[in-house]
Length: 335
Length: 256
Image (cartoon, rainbow over all chains, first blue to last red):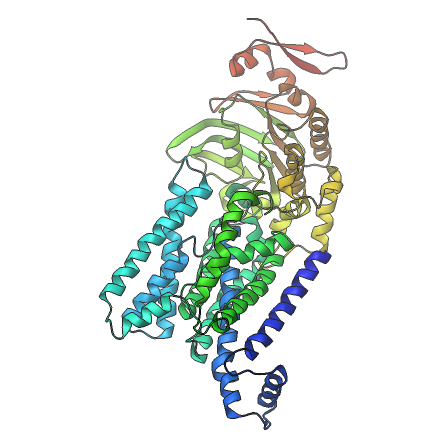
C-alpha cells in the first residue's frame, strides 16, 4: 500500500518540479517567484512589475509548450495503458500497433489538403482507428502463430505500409509550402505549439479519457480471455470498441499537435505497472502523471541541452529502444 | 433452474453435439462425463450463452437464455473455466473481486460489500494467505481454486465448472468435491465435468454421459456408470466395484 501511495506522490512532485524547471529554463530565464507573481497577477487581474518580455515568454511561448508536453505525454501514456490491457499484451503501444503512423498519415493528408487544426485532428483520429482496426483484424486471423508476435509483427508491417503512403504524400506535396510543414511535423516536435493547438488537443484528449476513467473497473476484465469476461457479465465487444475509440482519440489528439513521438505509450504504462500493479483504476492516473513528467523532461532537455533543438522523438527513442529490448529479453515475470 | 431441450451445439459451420435434453433442479448436482473431444466444454459454453444454440433451446428460470442480457446471465450462472495464467499480474484477491462485476453498474468499481463477498469466497477455499500473491506466480492448482472463488463471488444460482479438479492434488480434489456438496445444500445447482467417474459417485446426484456430442445415458451415477457405458465412452474395460459404505469406485482392468 505504501509503495503505491508513494508512487503517486513522487510522480506528482516530480511533475510539479519539472514544470517549474521547464518554465524557468531557456534563453530567457524565468525564476519561480517571477512565474508565481505573473500567474497570481493574471488570476487576480492586478498589475505586476515584470517586463512584457517575461510575460510573453511565460504566456505565449513557454506556457503552451509546457502544458502541451504534459497533455501529449499523459495522453500517449493513457492510450498505451488502455491498449496494453485490452490486447492482453504488455508489449503493445500506439506506435507498435501502427496507430501513431495511421494518425500521422491522416494528419499529413490534412496538411497536404491545407485543412485546419480541427480537421487535422479528425483525420488523425480516422487514420489511427483505421490502422488499429486493420492490425487487429489481420493479426488475430494469423492462426498458428504466437498471438503476441502476430500482433506486434502485423503492427510493424501495417505501419510500414502506412509509412509508404506518407512518403507518397511527401513526394506529391508542394516543396515550398507543404513539404517543410509535413517534414517538420513528422519529426515530432513541440516547438511550434500555439495556444490554439493546445485549446483543440486538450478537450479531445479529455473526451477520450473520461470514458476510460468511468469504465476503469470493467477495463480490467478485458485482460481475461473473452469467454471468461463475458461469463462474468461484460459485453466485451461493445467495451472493446469504446476503449479502442477512446485510446485512439487520445493518441490522435496528441499526434495532431506534436507529430509522431514514439515510445512514451509503451515505456510509461510499463514502468507504472511495475510500481502499482495491473489494476486499471490505479494504473491509469499514475501512468498519466509519469507520462506528463517524462514528456516534459524530454522536451525541456531537447530544447536546452544543445544550441539547436533535439526533437523529443529522438530522445524517447534513445531511452525506449534499450528498454524495449530489455523487456523482450528478461521481463516476462515482472508484469 | 435450467432446462435443455433437444439442444444442438457447436461452432458456426461445425456441429459438435445434438439432441441433448436434460433439466437441472435447484440445488441439484450433475456431473458430465465423456472422453476428450466429446463436446463437454462446447456444451458448457452454449449453456452459458457464449455460443448460440444451433438447434433446440436452453431455458434459464423458465425463460429462453437468449432473452437475458450478458450481465443478467452472469448474476445467475457462475463459470469456472479450465485454468490459465493470463498475461498480467493481478493479485488473487483482484481476480476474485472480478467475480463481482455482474453486480456492479457499468461505471462502478467494487465497494465495501463486494470486497466482503470476495473475502468470504477466498476464505471458503482457504486462499487467505495467497490473496496478495500475483495470479501469475501461484501453482496451477491454486489458480484453479482462485477461479472457483471468483465464481462463488458472483453469487450465482448455478455454477458451471469445466473440469474443476483437473490440475488439483488429491487433497484439493476432495476439497472441491466437498465444496460442491456444500453449495448444493445451500440450494445452488452445480454442473461440472470431470475425467474421473469416481467424482460422479462422490459428489453428483445425476450423471450425464456424453460421447461424440450425443447423450449415452442420463441418471443417477449408480444407474448409468456401468462397465458397458464406460467401455463405450473410453474404450477400456472397467469394473465398477460396490464399496462397504454404500459407495462405488471404478477399477480399470490392466490387461487386455
